[in-house]
Picture (cartoon, one colour):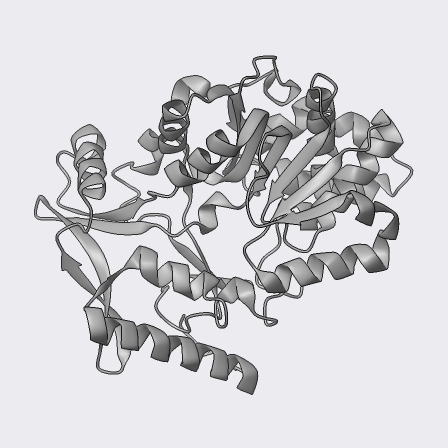
Length: 384
């Protein structure tokens, strides 16, 4: 971040306390993995980015998801949910990390108005602050939906239905690695000269070393200067679903690539990104707790993890194709709202230089094998 931002007193206290907590941890146990740093920077219960009242999602905050940009995104997703739910014995939707609740409200409203479906809606949310914010949002704006809303700490036992993870996986803590003079290192975080800084050392876990070694062998065999990310949390995420759910379709929508594009030699600085008040930069070690930190999703690794728990891949494509397959143009033409405004919003969701190409959608299923409309054309599973 080139220019030091103006930070109010509350934010300054938050980041100072979190820095002290992390500094103490490093003093006691030595350098920590970036995954541990990111976990605390985002999810520390008192001072983490997603857990305090400083968090704002949307135009006034640090970032806006597709559901914030336009309800069209949620309406298309609702169409896909509806076609799945009509084939299942139970009508349930579960959303991981529901932000401010707008997507949930739009999906439920569309399903009732257009498909006469009134499913139960579960939200699995890590942040107590966001849970309170979501509940307040529904009380104020959609009180009629509250009886169908359920906030959960984890996936309910024997869940049957559709699960949604929109911009959730990219906020999962990841490990950072570096290839330097053909040697493999993990990038750790330490504290020196009154600031957090990087330290290279041997990978902290056997599985991580295996993953980095395989990435080097497949894509980077002749590269001497390279850094990127590996996420080891996909498996625990899918294991929880596999263990607790029954007949289920999981739709993950996120920034990312298949492995061959993710670890392309030219992407030699990785995909890690920080956002502070809509300004993007590449330094995750400054102002812990005040900025969003994310890394793109390796959809090949996600698919491989899914296979271990007997999930089938029902489709993989970019956001533009998924939304169009789900009837984006029909929804615009049938809307009573300002079509010019909706068309402009649709461009932000679908143009290649906006969200249309870089955001991908994957459908993973447990005990479900029917085709999904979102992947009826331009399915790119062969790239995984």
